[in-house]
Length: 284
Image 1: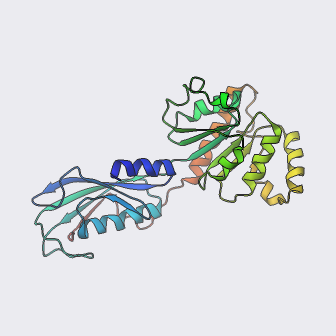
Image 2: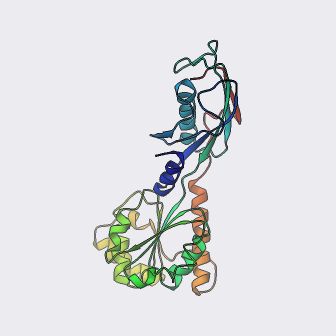
Image 3: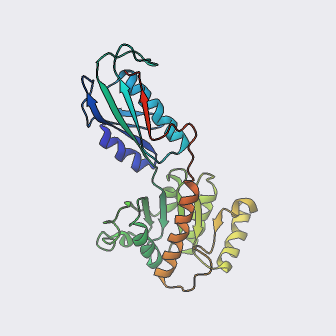
């Protein structure tokens, strides 16, 4: 796939990457200004010229990914026989500058149950840059006309009509945030059980009262889940202290709580950072 398809692929997978662009060329070089490639932790797509230049860029991109870096940086390469190289000499005679732009992984949120509250929550979340999965066992809840105000936002929205929604939960990527708010307490219970059988989810929230959660806790404990595991489910959901039970109020409270979780998960780290600009006398 080319660099644009690669970006879309990483976004759909909820995986981070680095977009690399040749920003300036002086003299002879293997690629022209504007050439791009995408680098992930384990793959690379398209090319900015191959050889030492590209190998050095890929290596640096993966340092940025490992560090969780968010700031772009520039690298400049002299392509001549006197330049020190790590990955093979390239003597085109020109000078090439490239821009490395980290593309953070979009958060993944799955809302199970698109009733009144689920629909309002989907409307709010759809305005954010994230991957949003909407799951319901009732096909009519996912009708395109009903969700027209959800599917036109910044989020990448995926609709899942499934009579067995726990199968959708099992297929979510690691780190996904799960919100359980179906129309049926029996379905909610099955989803809670399925969520607890994974230990790699970002968070799990269950709509309902403390009385509902008390009943669920007893039943989940009987299914073999430990008290420590049960602490991974938040019920009630949303920020504490916000009054009101209207669907929009609950949705805003839950969305605000999620934003806090996104921020905590994306705490920046910059080990090995070289700064905004690096000049490299060796190239491909």
